[in-house]
Image 1 (tube, rainbow, N blue to C red):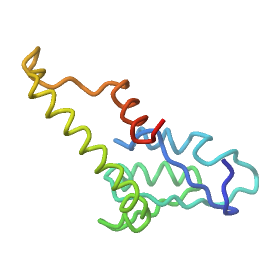
Image 2 (image 1 turned 180 degrees about the vertical axis):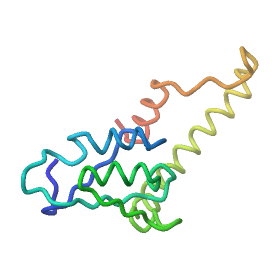
Image 3 (image 1 turned 45 degrees about the vertical axis):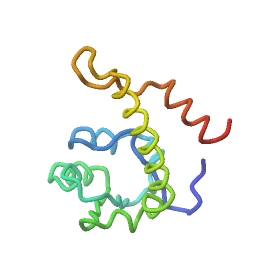
Length: 137
């Protein structure tokens, strides 16, 4: 999907940055920034205030890649990602309600008594059936 604003790219990693090593690998990947060139200037990377982002090693790794890391203040992620507060939040609440009902039903059936005593993890088939019912497919 092409970026709609010239000079601005929005990228997300497949998982959250747990440590500086993973973040450094992501920064160095071409998918992060796209192909470089002789006229590429300094880039600015806006991140939340997770510990791996603000580490001195992260800053040093970014500097070698002509990147300036700007860290957002605590508790401001929802201002930059308002969808998390609105539509995504409603979807999460819906999924939690459905999954909670599934877990309650499993406990009533006694499924928690087998093996370690933990409930079985939700399988893809359950998730796909739930998605189909939610979307009316």
